[in-house]
Image (cartoon, rainbow, N blue to C red; front, side):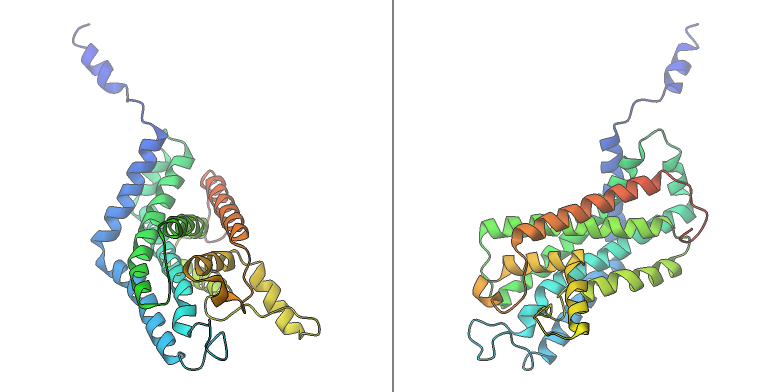
Length: 286
């Protein structure tokens, strides 16, 4: 009997907290990211390159105020959009790991473990969110070259909005990656959905006004950009970076509206991920 006691104790697996599982998976994503330097360069370097090329190239041809008073250059206007683009690229790169983990067998071992599915989803999404926010803050250092005045309160609000936006975008990427079997198909779907969402967010050009007598195409573009959740992420970041008089000629939702929309987007996207993770998949988008 005494010889069997150690065996019975070792056979009983200790209880593991779901939050511990989520934290472990989150930390795994962070370590995995920084071990792949090409991902760091691609997620940060390309948006910075876009910002410099487009910002300098269109610097003289774009200005919110025609006389230059209380206006902004395209370099300043494009800065919040570039910040959101970094979060977007990181969401793409971070959620590719889901397909890789499935191919390597790691994801299957996690799914058969006696843990709730939400802890696995939360760990993967939180890992991508932390990576995205860290890269966004790194790019935010360049704001010292622009006409911005970030106080302590605005910095905290901006950090919170970046976390919520990155969480929503990473969850959205998780939704797509979970149903994919190949990285090629994942890239095609992400470019088809996320890049147009970014382009139609007011990041690259302002939301056109919906005035009476406006052309039908202008009205369609206006409302298409208004129903886009990424629009409110870009608008919220822009309001926290610049003074109200600099944005007087832009269609800009209130900061409260931006918070409500982005929080709702993050909750809906994460809830959908949680639901999808509990179902079996048979192929790409099936």
